[in-house]
Length: 300
View (tube, one colour):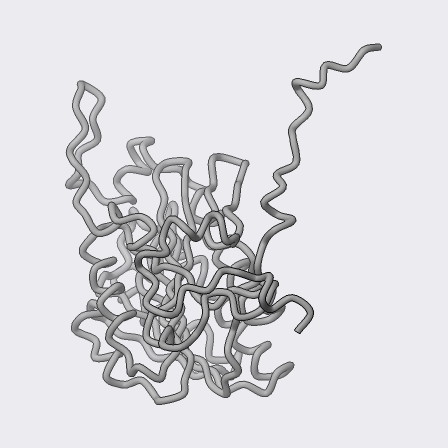
């Protein structure tokens, strides 16, 4: 039987050129989960497990902040990780009360990130991991301001998750403060910088225009209401939470993260690898020395 080579998927050579993201040495890390609803409610248990593993296996100090001003409603129980007896309770508080047995300090903020005072509470030399699970530009603007507002000595990673009915994306970036005198590719297989999510996709901070047509979705409806109308998938948020945990595992546990964008389309996912060619699109944003000539450091 003759095989049609056209239907055989080609292997992307970009993975062979992928560079790993440098994770500086650190003694303490704080996870800040912004949005404890659709994706956040499923992601928080994984964040706690990873924080505990960092304590036990790597002797790191960890703490977690959960941020969400909303309360659990009956309609949330279909898609989010809440049950009916929790209706009426603040989402961040509810998740915090479930997880004391892990031995990881958790603080709940029943307010928006901008009003929480979290940026002012940071500790110098503490790594900050911002995990964005919000569904609108206003919340992401607050996260972007926080990513740029920490002390210049703090390393800040922002991992953003967003989704529609069956499509989602996870994007990671790093704050620019550390860039001074740091080459973009200081070693052959390692990268020192990634653009922040709102720099990779500026539309994240902008209100999207209202769709046209008879089947347009009411922009005033919440994600939970969209579920009841069949406009929001029941399982997509679990997929987004899984991808968030994959990013955290590769970033902090394995320290071999060589991708910075992942797109989920139903059961399929595709990631963008970290390469010189791909990052060149954002080089004008890079404030450190532009040094992508790896020939000068080969063999060192």
